[in-house]
Amino acid sequence: MPDHLTSEERSAHMRRIRKTDTKPEVRVRRTAHAMGFRFQLHRGDLPGTPDLVFPRHRKVILVNGCFWHQHEGCRLARMPKSRLDYWAPKLERNRARDEEARRALGEAGWTVLVIWECWTEDAEALRERVGGFLGG
View 1 (cartoon, rainbow, N blue to C red):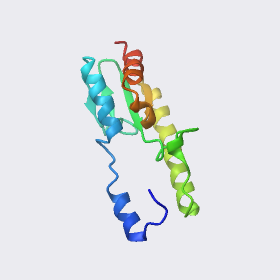
View 2: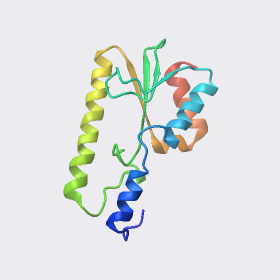
View 3: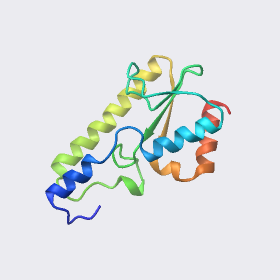
View 4: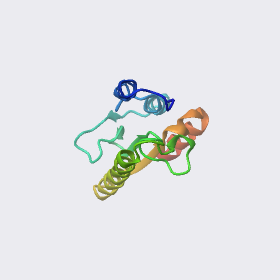
């Protein structure tokens, strides 16, 4: 996203960013489904509303956007250059909320896999990661 956007253009861009059914999430769903796994989506009754829930296996997959969840060391997770007073605390809250959700899921007996957006670009590696986690 260029740095020369007007405030209105930036707001319009940010409004188009989805919370669910993102491209990385759909890639993970298609991969798991093609491997024969069936799952539920966005269970609001579980901490953090996991993206994919495999009740039979007592496992969940969280698909995290590298920017929004600040994937450490990732090229997609760079901190914005402007309005750091807004972005730094917002992104840190996201990370803290993620950590709390993973902890609560673990305490409730769920096994958690976090898949980062950048990891979904390699279909074969994604298949191995999902298969290794779900035992397929």
